[in-house]
Length: 299
Image (cartoon, rainbow, N blue to C red; front, top):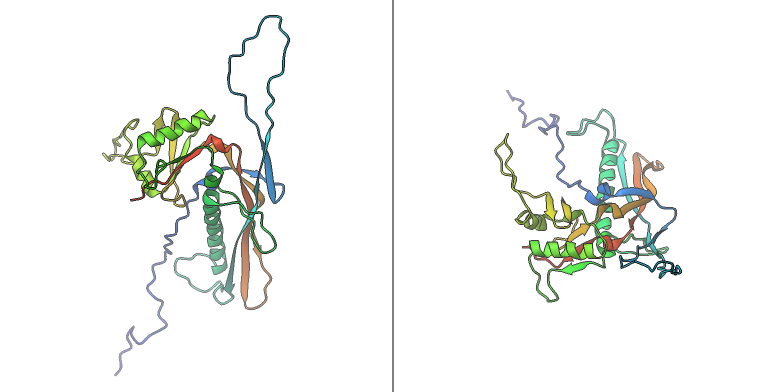
């Protein structure tokens, strides 16, 4: 007599844990953290103005009033770029009674959820490192990113040479002082993992605390007290490994021309199609309010 074992059966449900593990990073510190505004066209423009530098302003009693030097306002712009994620799911895979490990919704709903996260990740990449392009019928428009905008206060770890140098506390503070000298009040530092560890090793204005409840030493540094104010240290996977950006966060905005939107596409067969699309650009109200340190060692 033949005994039917699990080796003979191919209809048994596989032993898949009913949890879908997605290790893809979802963090979008700049896209999520910058304030949002509206763009009125594919070329988004704004005006910049500056106060005159402080000076000895006393005048003689009874003297005539004379106008000071007039400084023209500066017109600044950035192109709105389009980001899109399209997906397609067969009707069989999307059947409501199909059991799928780790997914408590239809396949279409799951793919939509993924697309929304992925478009935010794509936006983060370009908010950090994008370069401007006007675009044409065959070339996509492109938004200028934070690092490309930040040109006034650009320190280099190579110190004018060809060899990169390790980030030091002195170098970090020198850059803050340079930014302060051009009128900025930086409050947020964005960096990748390696430079975050370098900053966590700073000792000058750092207090290591021990949590009373857990007796654990807090070894990371998320807020650094500098001579130029508290600096929040933000880990951003999309920052270049050799670069640190020190920004005045309220001087940066995401301008939405078309907010993120899901659109079901026409059904042409035995499947469902959809897309997620957004049109946006980065608004830098005053790029000299921040700065960056580049060409740092990464190992």
